[in-house]
Image 1 (cartoon, rainbow, N blue to C red):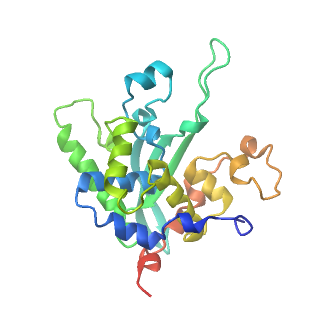
Image 2: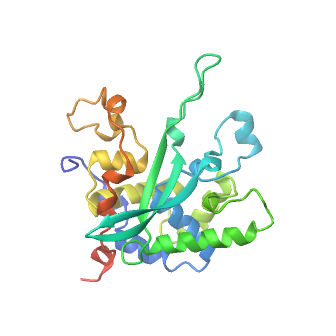
Length: 246
């Protein structure tokens, strides 16, 4: 259903080119952080657990990353059980403060599902090793749990510096949101996501996802709730399909 939408491919590196670039990075931890942002199409605030004094004073951001957690599940495809990593996070842009006293804030969650197989998504193995390294750092913290392992103990500014320090030489205008932009285009162009699947993966409202498609959207978000099961089958496409040299 994205066929009639104009996608600015020229501004986005191909999936193959981007992966080759990131695979050249020497610092494992910083490369893993970049892979996390890209694979999850996360905004900075959705994965960080700290904010600066200025952000606190001006209510410019929230550390939504404190709520992020991961888990595993099984998914059967072609008669074979495969492990899937689930990354569940709050959607920063869809957080709503209570309008009246006594009401609770309204939040929207999204879940990103990725195969735990080198054949389909080798970068997930790097994320799992990153969790292991985090566990070593927090071994004296009784409150730490492995499913907190993809929370980033830093501010948005620190995260922005990591992305720019590693990728600016390749992409002069790079910013953390660029990774979300790259991933969105790759999901549509390579994995053939439709608007419904994109809404689930990216945390968009269906009204946003179906904008420009001439489909009535006013009640979609009331009656329809996309989940990771809607798209996960497409993630079981061998990565060499996109990265193998012609």
